[in-house]
Picture (cartoon, rainbow, N blue to C red):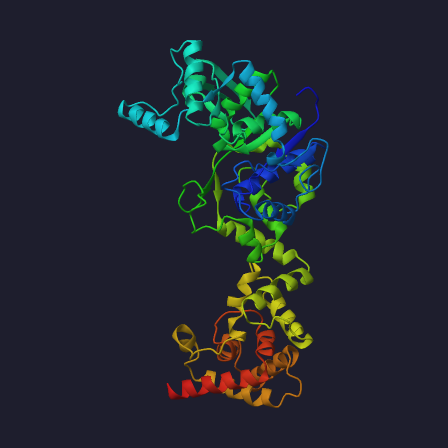
Length: 497
């Protein structure tokens, strides 16, 4: 670049929700800018109006903010190089397209979709890779002008194609991949830079925008590698200096080893889905950053400030990044454990309401009960939506004890423990975890039954589960009335068996 200022951008299309892969692109650009005291810019690439969805831009920006990203320029904050939506930049593109037409570096193409399809089928039949064939090949200038006039007389609207130089190598030193080179004869022929409605295509608009916005570095996914030679041709045609490119590795499924596909519904792939499940934004930021980038050392959990300080684009991986949902759960669990109780309470309470286990407008007593419940499961939860399943015993009447749990209490001491516990809790003036614990210890002292034979019958009878959070707290949250009811039911069952 003519100047040495670091300026990078993330340029989403408002065609859907924020995908994990796109979020990674945004995060890598953001960290590169912040580490180097540069500028991070958001630009909306919305020229493909047929694919744009309502609130697509809003969704993108909201989810980026949720992840903790902020930007220096963009459609919502302005800046010196706007507009920051491509749909509002047509007046910038049009004269530049005309310049290429005037210089003979681009031309009007009137081939219809039907003709282009017929060409492709003929090429396949000949064993050739499909490519665009220059429609004016072998024509004199007069013949070319007559062909154009005939097409216009039929009411056809042209696309504008860029004239690709013959047998030229286009190479760049990729920040991630190293030396990359394409021969111009391999890219499929002259490519479209403006559609029939006059709007520019991606490969033209992105070059103009990056140049006009003084973008110094472009970090993007590996799927853009094939676009780069086309963009270098346009930089060359205008005599502009290209930014430095870095193409990040693909994200693959840890289970299948295949490229993460948006059509693969077995993996949640959109940031909004994780928000709705009650994941923490800092944990998502941490996990996404580790998809194709690694810090020095063995540690993997860092806060955003630490990531900004340590970020080094040289540590971007050339190998595919494995998307491992179990690792994401582990990382999120680390953040859940470290989070303040009010944050977890707020997120988990929403999940309890969403699951229909807490009223939409709970009273203070219910909120306090929920707070105790959430604290009980805080260290176990990988994400907040799990609270509904983990704590189901507190919302649903359990079925009869069965399986290993029934085997566990099918002994001579279990009825003794349960009858003692039942009699004593009925007399408790205050039914809380402190009194429950005192009661259990008193039973141990009076009966000599201890350890697993003491605790397990109470847990199984009250909660119908063999494992769970602290027993006294669990019994308190089940409540005195239900605890008595569950113990009576269990005693009847084991007496019967």
